[in-house]
Amino acid sequence: MLWEIIKKEFHSNIITARFIVGFIICLMLISASTYVAIQDYERRLNDYNVAVREHRDEILNCRVYSEIHPRVDREPNRLSIFNQGMGKRLGNTFSAGLSAVPMVCDGEKHGAYNPFLALFSSIDLTFVFQVVLSLLALLFAYNAVSGEREDGTLKLIMSNSIPRSSVLIGKYLSALLSLFWPIAVSIIVALLVMMFSGKVSLTGSDFSRILLIVVVSLLYVSVFYLIGLLISTKTQRTATSLMLAMFAWVFLTLIYPNAGGFLADRVIKSNPGEGQFSQIGELWKEFERERDKYEKKVVPKYETYGSSSSGSWSSSSSDTLSYFISESRAIKGEIKPESAIDALRQFYQYQEPQRISTANRIWQIRKQALDDSYGRKRRLTMHILRLSPAVVYDNTSAILAGTDLGGIQEFMDQVQEYRSSFIQYLYDQKAFLSEQWFRYGDQKTENRPDLSGMPVFEQRDGNIASSLSRGITDILLLIILNAMFFILSHTLFVRQEVK
Image (cartoon, rainbow, N blue to C red; front, side):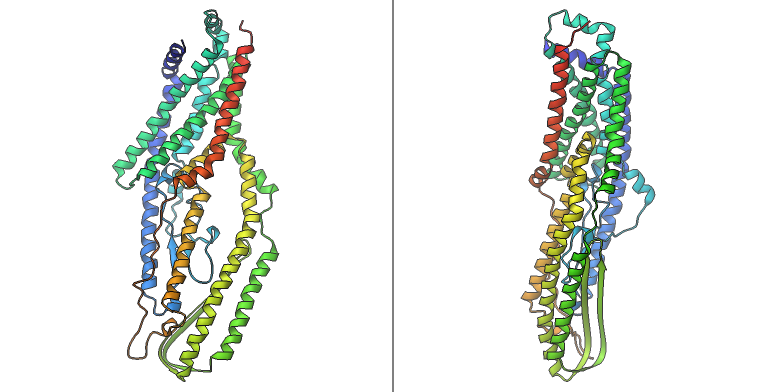
């Protein structure tokens, strides 16, 4: 009997105008948004490749070790076509030099910005599901019970001694089956557009992530169907059901996600304290005092004969507690007296490890302070916004696509690992003690350092298990919402009197 109910309800759903119109709109939006997203991805990939070449050439053109300041570029995520997440909002070029341990907030953006393309590419696949399919689910549900009660069909069904649980479960499963097809076909259309574009190559891991996004999408539309079913079960008239369903959809998908974020931004203060910034400044001042003191002690006055260049630059920002001091020196020519050469080697052997140590200590302060301010605000904001299934779904999809903040933090861990390997390379080469740290030859010959063994950054794809561990809370929340709304709907339906 249950299977008969499912077949009847499924047939009734898919022949309705609302299903056909919603299906067509969904496919049109998915096709258009995927095409635009692929164009945007290609542009960002080209910008990335150009930046990688430029930064590689910068290193190859370095005359001495002290001029090497590696910069690492973040490759655009292939699955950003499905959910953009934070990938386009944050920087994609990071310094991996000695003077600072790179963090997410330190990124710079490479490439040109096209506001028109950015506007249209902001509509990704999960956004379409988030808005269109949630509305379609409510339109399936708003008259599922109240409509049959109003036209007398429900009373007729109940007169056949069919268990009420079977009726409700049949309606629910048939609706899920009906909503599965727009999701599945939309994903297939998106994959076909990507395949025929020839610009995106997906891996086996990517397909696994897409499959998980399909599952989460089904959980999400199920929540909205059950919300509509609860409303339909509670109300007597379809007009009332439709009005309440539309209010729920507008509030949960449009009003609350924006209003909740706005209020959280106003209520929760996130600026790190001045104390930490002053502490960081004092660490660099201490470094400079010790550096100058040691230089006066070991380095005699000397003259250079030939070309010589030196640079010292610093940067600071109290908002992100960013503060670093970097230096380089390149001499081509004679250094008199010659004893100054050994003195400079001794000086840099002392100075650069001190610079690395200072940068590492500052990173510990920044990491804790920024997590206490911005990290706390982000977590509290997310807890507030989790009252909306739309926000939960968007966050979960971004996590599964690897475009969430956690996915970018995994990339930053790789950048920090690369910085450590670069520093170890300098130690292995005895670069700080080498004359090639500051001198690349005399007036007749050049003696630039051999950089063939320098480590090259290779970005690794994120781990699916790590993504699931970050998203398990939101996935469980969607499951709990489904169970809660189904139990409420079932309880009301089996207890109410059918007239």
